[in-house]
Image (cartoon, rainbow over all chains, first blue to last red; front, side):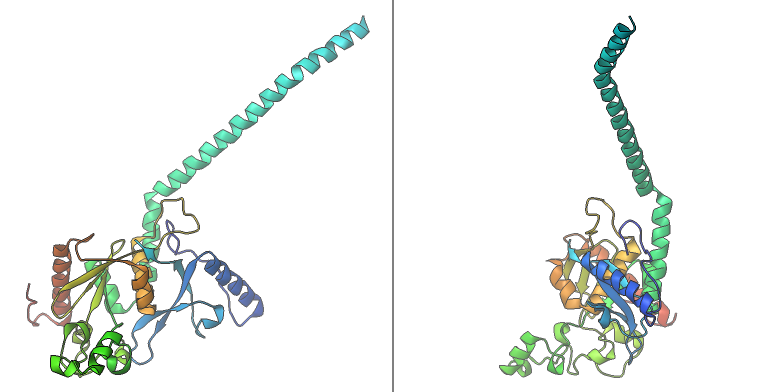
Length: 77
Length: 253
């Protein structure tokens, strides 16, 4: 999510393919280096309720996640 | 004669060279200034493009819809805000906060006649983080379950998050939080409304403690009129009643 633009697709690919994974990891790192937060929308297994999971490393992304959303870091307004 | 002409030509060229150089340089400066102005005009045009903002908001709404729960999406679509249950108090053994655990260990809990209901002081039973972090343990229907959390937040686009007690409607505090563009910090742009709501929702559901500690906390009424929040809470109760069915009792004002 980019201020003034809304949703922007940064990279896409199949993380099981090494070439795609490299691109995804590079973009993930770039976004975190720029100070963005990364979140993965998930569903709680028991209740089925949707929630988000903040991830700080590429390896923290749950297997099978179909997207990672980057958004600016929260600050006191 | 020819030599004199050649010398004159060389002299004239030598004298004219700095002038020509200066003229060329000023022409280049003028052109680059013109380009810069045109670029800035284009950027301003782009920023003011209402179509672009509308398209961004449309995309943001789709993204929000795909991430939040169906009930939350309907709430945002119909009422313009989302309610998220808070569950910081439900941590620790017995669903007690650290301060309440200390209070209990000193033997004060029983005397107060309160259970583990957290802020509302509801009866025993505790809060169940396993049930979506929303409900007190007990057999209740889903809509009631959402309303029975000890405290909850109202997420408005580009406004502070308001914490309140669903059972009593008491407003607790405002949490001022924003998501500034760190990369392009000079630009005066902000997230589309639905993206702002989604960012707050993600941050709250993923790491409530962190978001709340990053936010500036104020008493209710600092930025959002408490009367408006109370009206919104009434609208929310009515909205939930209508979702339950037309025969459900009317929410008290």
